[in-house]
Length: 235
Image 1 (cartoon, rainbow, N blue to C red):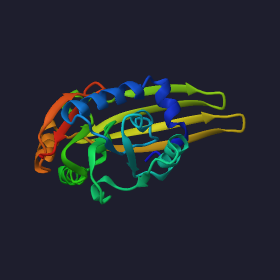
Image 2: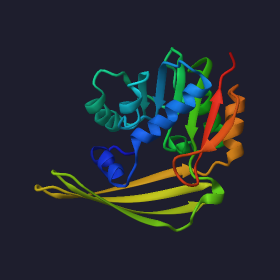
Image 3: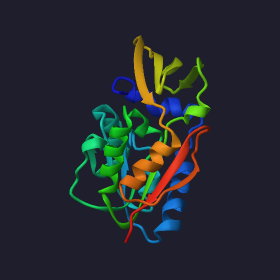
């Protein structure tokens, strides 16, 4: 999904104001309020490890992502922290955690409510009794803005990057088209990515957590129009 753009992913989001430190502090507070003393944490869809870089100060952390290039970027920052390439729908690590997180709307890549149920069920099976699951949903259907465009620019000493994109909706499916211009002293490269995410309703997320045997709590997410879902596994 981000295989070609993985090397500039952090640069783009840092320039757009994404605050991994603040988001990680919020996640830590949510976990500790529901399971004081939680120590083992699994980040599914960890990407380049932006949250894990901060959460490792408080937890024994473990990361999972489907994209090998994103994991390669994460390893540059996370050293010996375990990082595994895997699909959240079939995740089976053989161990349990105090907390499992799936942030930044990664779960939106599920293509149907059946896939959503499967993924949430797999995440829940990696929780110990009393453990906490945090899932950031994709945009709520009522918050979707049709026909939007965007541009983001980021620079470093080595390169300049512009990402321009547009989005559209087809029923409950959203399509994001992203074009990258990456300029270095050697060349200017043009990359194109297409992302497809599903507009699940709040009830879809809540039902998936309930079916996985978790309590359900909904709080504001870190991005407008996207809710955060919390589930706690019975002791």
